Image (tube, rainbow, N blue to C red; front, side):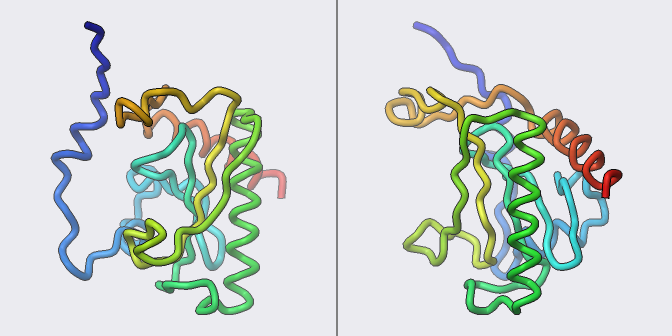
Length: 165
């Protein structure tokens, strides 16, 4: 028998569950420590953050600062800013990880898998053959790098982009 060691998983299992009304997408930017929150970039109206429970290495979320539950609730300025963050997230991931493709989308509402009522877009880098039997049969995802190491890698690229503009 072979053993898979996913040491990061215990953090998820033992993490305190948010109380009713707590929203991590509101709490993370207010924390004041982007490294601790894994916030890769902030714009005027939204931000990019590493997904703590990613589908793939480098999985980012683009989130408006203002608490909204659905796309029509965004102002025109928020829509433009959020789309720019999604594009920047794709550019950062392309420069840092060189993925072959992306899945980019929204889960809107509980039936769609939207477990947190705060609009956010998923930016998931993809590589040929990155999905194997583990998630299907083993109900386990294997990530090749810790969140802290991935944050440092993506933040360095994001800071490089900021210096160019």
